[in-house]
Image (cartoon, rainbow, N blue to C red; front, side, top):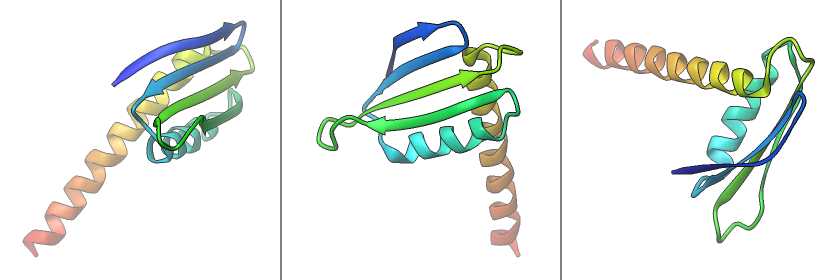
Length: 93
């Protein structure tokens, strides 16, 4: 996975994530929109055969878009861990 900054302005960031698609894009967008400092979060896949995801984030200035993305990724990690633990518990009976 390779991440490239495409546009960086005050309170706005656009990053391209090579080799990813709607799965990562929708998860990241959903988690970003849970953050009250995020004014806009969206994504697009430029071409379905290429598989490059572009994520855009605008914040209100109380935190940077980079910080908002990092926190969203930390929440994703915590939720996956929580799901894994619940799944393993259910599997054990």
